[in-house]
Each structure stands twice: as C-alpha cells, then as structure tokens.
Image (cartoon, rainbow, N blue to C red; front, side, top):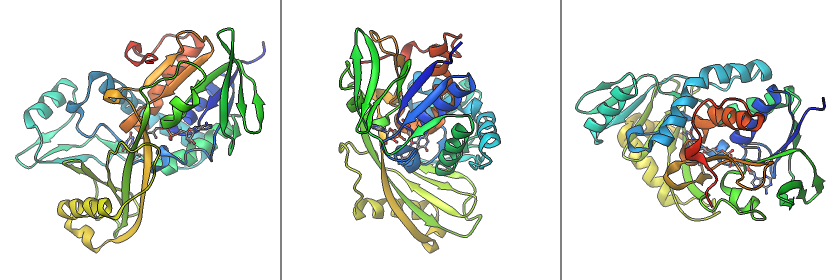
Length: 346
Ligand SMILES: Cc1cc2nc3c(=O)[nH]c(=O)nc-3n(C[C@H](O)[C@H](O)[C@H](O)COP(=O)(O)OP(=O)(O)OC[C@H]3O[C@@H](n4cnc5c(N)ncnc54)[C@H](O)[C@@H]3O)c2cc1C
C-alpha cells in the first residue's frame, strides 16, 4: 500500500516534533518552512521544561506540560540517537524565590506528586529540567532528515487551496505542493496561514525579550525565578535572562529600557552576574493563546486539515506530547490523553 503523504506548514519545534513522530509511523512527510527550520520562537525561547509557577495555570495547560515532561528524557534520547547531536537536556532544578503564594504552591506540589522543599525565602523544585532549545532544534532537524522527512525551507505558504471541504494543495511562492494530509504548525502566524478557511482567531503573537550573558562555568547551577524574571544557566556558562510578555503584533524589535530592567532584576537575584559578559539581546514571537491553551485538532469541516499550534509560553515543554497526540489523531490510534480542551476555536 502507498504510504500516506503529509505536508506540515511551519518548521518550528512543533512542526519538527510532529514530523519526527509521523515519519516513525511510516508517513511520507514534507515540512514547508518560510525561513530555515526553528529560527523563530523555538530558537528565541528559554527551554525551561515546566510552567514557571504551575499553580497559576489552568489544568489543561498543566496536563499537557506534565505529559510532555514525563516523555522528555526518552524523547531527547530518541532524537539524539537519530541525529548524533546532544540537545543538552539537564535536570538542573528550579528555585522560585519569594514573594509567591506559598500555600497554593504547596497544595499544587502535593496534588501533582512533585518533589519540593519550601521555606520562608524560596520553593526548590529539584526535578525541573531544561533543554538548550537551539541545540534541540538543530538535533531535531538532523533527526527528521535521518528519518526521510523532506525539508522545503525558504519557501512561504501563500494559500491553503480548499475545494469540496478538502485541502487539495498548498500554494507557495515557488508553486503548488500536494499531499493527503495537511497540518498547520505555523506558531504565531497560524491565523494568517489559515486565512482561506475559518481561521483560529485565538492565536496571536506575544513578544518575549531575552538577554544573554556569559559567566564562568558553574556560576549558576539551577534555574531561578522571581516575580516574572528567570535566569537559565547553560552547561558552558551562558546565562539567559527572560522575559517580557508583550502584545505588540508581529514586531520583533528590542529596546534598551527592557534590557536594563531584565539585567537589574537578574543582578538582584544573582549578584555575580554583574561581572559577566553581556552577549546578546533578542526577542521572539510566542504563539499566544487564551489561557495558554494550544489547539491540537482536526478542522471541524475539512477532514484532511489539522492544526498543532498556539502553545504560547510552553511549546518547548509540550512538544513531545503535542506531536504524539496529533499523530494519534491522524492515524486513528487511541489517544494518549483527552484532547477535548484543545479543539479548533474560531
Ligand atoms: C522569549 C521566549 C521564552 C520562551 N521560553 C520558553 C520556555 O522556557 N519553555 C517552553 O516550554 N517554552 C518557551 N517559550 C515558548 C516556545 O518557544 C513556543 O511555544 C514554541 O517555540 C512554539 O513553537 P512553534 O513551532 O509553534 O512556533 P515557531 O517556532 O514560531 O515556528 C513556527 C514556524 O512557522 C513558520 N511559518 C510561519 N508562517 C509560515 C508560512 N506562511 N509559510 C511557511 N512557514 C511559515 C515560521 O517561519 C516558524 O519557523 C518561549 C518563547 C519565547 C519567545
């Protein structure tokens, strides 16, 4: 029997993770990406594998994050086996510094069986992991190629061509591409990509600015979070400081005032950072969704059109489960979890 063909629109972490899983199930997958894979939000993000203060999020967000977290170590090992590139998965733990709602934090940790240590000044979560997202992207890109996925990069999708409640093709500026199944994984641009069908009007860009320092190896050994600002150490001494959540449309500008604010908050949390070298300041556009709840669904009327987008602040964490779910949905296999909360919302 001829293998089914799938086109994935967008090659960020969600598109790459989806391709990696579908290719393992025998599908012939093509990713069509406007830039090079992973150059947008998935590169710009931090790679903490947990909501920052999980007790503040809806159960639908925590359910996906917890399922993603549970799969991460095996998922990263599978990717590395295919690619030979280490994504630097690291169970570094996370310190949440006061002030925060200690009672709510404790209730949440107990209810979710999370290891924790709570005292007057902080909550210590030893099992929180992180991944170096630019390395993960590089590793995933190589892994999907190793599984036979076709990458069509530097190619923008201009239209999804629909006739008789079915996607027939996609139009790119280089011509038309055909497949049996189409999945939109276009992050913050998903609404634009879906303009020719009832689009998902709930997904919109939410800018986040990040600042990068280089300190001696070992200056910081765990993620630190306090009042909206976090520090993420990398194994080679780099330390990321993030982030803002700005509703400014498709504007990836950065500004010196925000850089100062992030640096000042970071120096208060980790005074040794004052001696570190400033490396870079950038921003990325998260695929924002109401309450942080992504869409992982089949189109209500167009049978061969799916969406896997809108993961907002936690797309790196959710990627493995989100990819598994969409692959299960397409193949008709039993779903790993209930996805009724992640339906197509016009
Ligand atoms: C500052 C910041 C910090 C973050 N920190 C974390 C964190 O610590 N932990 C965590 O879990 N998550 C974090 N995130 C969120 C996470 O990065 C995102 O949720 C995730 O990257 C979304 O992945 P995606 O593949 O949907 O989107 P993207 O990576 O944006 O990929 C979408 C792709 O679609 C392509 N595309 C768009 N339109 C078209 C078109 N017309 N034709 C072809 N291709 C198209 C784009 O070029 C892009 O490559 C952070 C994000 C930011 C910005």
